[in-house]
Amino acid sequence: MREITKITCIGAGYVGGPTMSVIAHKNPNIKITVVDLNSARIAAWNDENLANLPVYEPGLDEIVRDARHRNLFFDTDVERAIDEADMIFISVNTPTKTYGKGKGQAADLKYIELCARQIAAVAKDDKIVVEKSTLPVRTAAALKNILDNTGNGVNFHVLSNPEFLAEGTAVSDLLNPDRVLIGGDDEVAIEALVKIYRSWVPEERILTTNIWSSELSKLVANAFLAQRVSSINAISELCEVTGANVDEVSRAIGYDSRIGSKFLKASVGFGGSCFQKDILNLVYIARTYNLHTVADYWEQVILMNDHQKSRFAEKIIQTMYNTVNGKRIAFLGWAFKKDTNDTRESAAIYVADYLMDEEAQVVVYDPKVSDNQIYSDLVSLGTRSLEEIKRLVTIVNDPYDAVGDAHAVAILTEWDEFKTYNWNKIKGEMKKPAFVFDGRKLLNNIEMNKLGFEYYAIGE
Ligand code: NAD
Ligand code: UGA
Image (cartoon, rainbow, N blue to C red):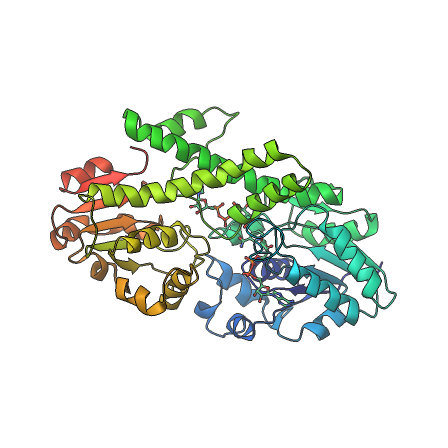
């Protein structure tokens, strides 16, 4: 196998962009081209003003500044990039199917298959094809089949190399990963990929497994993480009725080194593009093998999460004398977590929808999410026209514009800046009683009560 000097990544999204930027930053001798069909996204990756990169991640601008135009390139010419690469990462989206068999559960692999067919059609020499996208276990076999049967007689080696970065901390996760996982059955191809990561990842953190274990481990890692959030959220409801405090319970159990302290923060519900999608996929796979008890077990993680989101919305309505009709409710935060502009599956979308059903007037402020994104998230629910949404939802660029005259404030994302606001001033500008519903347990109960708020937080 020849030395890897050129890498192409298909998909310049939240994973492809940051991952390839870090690989390029750490491997200045390898030329990396990230391609995407979305020309606006590629233009944004090439924008000289680094504030306009399509993905907001702390520290990403510095990494891109270092490598871009040196050995990191963003382009729309997919065929040329495939042709010249020794190694091709596939990092396209794998959403939940919205049609046909497996609708609402299975992963939609149409983008993956298109990539495979395009690679097969273009490749004129041997390639290592790396699954970076999250895929159902055994996808590599389908990928290899398409590559071998539609290709030009060249050799393809398929590896699985799932990504474990979390949004908001993508750069530090990539620079200092807990582990890098590589699954495959060809020692030479595996070594070629290990060598790239070895530039900065300690050898003992680079795990190699068979390809099916690698594919399945990615789904299982997300399922376990989401399960912890649903578990603590289930306990948050119990805390609210018993007088226990969920943060204290988390701390008490988290000190047990067998349980560990991470991922025990109760919230309005997990969001993000992957937890729900990957668990649904796991459930679907279990069902296709007739493992219904296994499928039911994991499905419960999603049901609990849905319950947590609607429970939060119901709490707002019930507390405000069972009606929010015409009442102004200020949403602080729309992103699915802090330090990202990503809103996919954000709890805020579902809470807003619930309150809009009750004719509330929702006013949204988020430091990083654009107006268009918020409206498009609500339109994509398919429950209302844009005109109807605009009648009920206003978006503002200054948090104090959101809270002025509000009947209630609802905290949906844990942005640090919300803690630094002048809450005394906010209280003065709100309608009374001034309700605060804290879906992230971000503020201090005692201080908020002292300021005169009617303060309700998840799990206390
Ligand atoms: P994304 O939607 O942000 O990016 C995917 C990109 O692929 C899009 O820009 C799309 O235009 C492009 N694309 C699709 N088909 C293409 C084709 N045939 N040719 C060229 N470009 C094409 O998705 P993402 O968040 O980057 O996720 C990608 C994969 O990584 C998913 O499987 C996801 O589950 C997984 N993943 C995501 C995260 C995360 O934090 N977002 C973390 C780990 C793993
Ligand atoms: C998650 C995983 O953490 C990554 O390892 C994985 O690579 C990624 O999914 C993926 O496959 O896409 P991400 O969704 O970006 O990363 O962010 P997380 O930090 O995991 O948060 C997910 C959701 O859970 C957020 O809405 C967050 O607010 C919520 N959460 C997280 C809690 O409510 N409580 C917690 O204690 C932790």
